[in-house]
Image 1 (tube, rainbow, N blue to C red):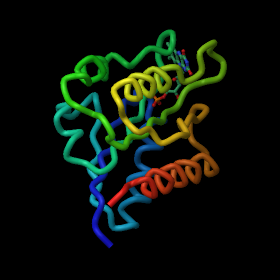
Image 2 (cartoon, rainbow, N blue to C red; image 1 turned 60 degrees about the horizontal axis):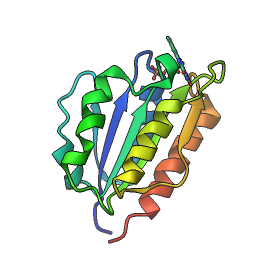
Image 3 (cartoon, rainbow, N blue to C red; image 1 turned 180 degrees about the vertical axis):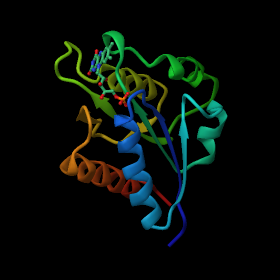
Image 4 (tube, rainbow, N blue to C red; image 1 turned 90 degrees about the vertical axis):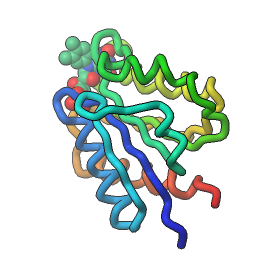
Length: 152
Ligand SMILES: Cc1cc2nc3c(=O)[nH]c(=O)nc-3n(C[C@H](O)[C@H](O)[C@H](O)COP(=O)(O)O)c2cc1C
C-alpha cells in the first residue's frame, strides 16, 4: 500500500486538543503512514506546506467567544494565498459546552476551508475538555475516516 503523507496541526493551551492530535498521530503511525505533527504555538507553519500532504488535520481549542486561537490567526488569514481546491482536510478540537458557542473555532476553521474549496472530512470532531478513553477512540475513528477519503 502506498504511504500517505499526513500533516497534523494543532493549537492547544492546556493540552486537551494536543491530546487529541497525539492520539491521531499514534494511530496513523501504527498504520505506517508518514505523519508530521506541528504546533501553531511552537513551530513555523507556512500555508504552502499544506500542498505537500495527502491529508491535513487541523485542531484548535476555542478561546474567548470561540474565536480562532491567536497563534493560528495568521495561518487562518493566509489560507487564501494557496489554491486549496480539492485538498483533503479535517478539523477537530476541544471546547467546553459551558460556553454559548461550543467549539466555535472548529466551525470557523471548517467553514473557511470549505469556502476555499477544501474537501472536508464530514464530521467535525469536538471533544468536551480533556479527552477520555471514549474520546480517544473517536479521535482514532476520525483519523481512520479521513484516511479512507484519500484517493490514490
Ligand atoms: C477564557 C476562555 C474562553 C473560552 N471560550 C470558549 C468558547 O467560547 N467555546 C468553547 O467551546 N470553549 C471555550 N473555552 C474552553 C476551552 O476551549 C477548553 O477549556 C478546551 O478544552 C481548551 O483546549 P486546550 O487544552 O487544547 O487549550 C474557553 C476557555 C477559556 C479559558
